[in-house]
Length: 143
Image 1 (tube, rainbow, N blue to C red):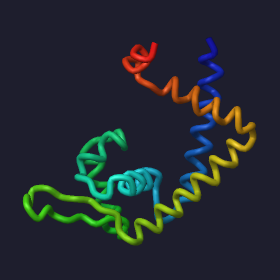
Image 2 (image 1 turned 90 degrees about the horizontal axis):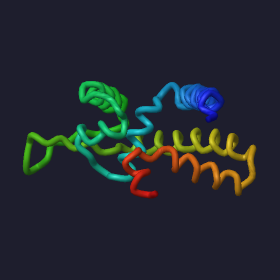
Image 3 (image 1 turned 60 degrees about the horizontal axis):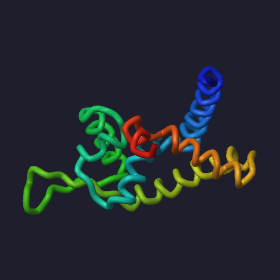
């Protein structure tokens, strides 16, 4: 087993990524906000509770995050026209601009990291990380 070595490398990679993203996204965006914008790019509109699985946090924390994002003009909240209890979250024009900037920051960093290894090894790395990122139940089905 190589768990200790893996833990050290994974920890360093995660720390470096987090530091780069914090510095690159500041002062107008956080990594969690970028995640919200990225999901909204795919889904177009969502209910606040729909963000919980993407952010792995509590409903209260999601509400606070969305409050800050709305205050900063990154998202819009609108009540459903048929059911006023439902609130829809959509991305604003400014949110789209910040999403694009955030993706550039992330892509530049990951390209810099991945370009240290060959294209073949990049594909292999992505494949292997995909294998270990599946849940134990999913892994059993694949065998």
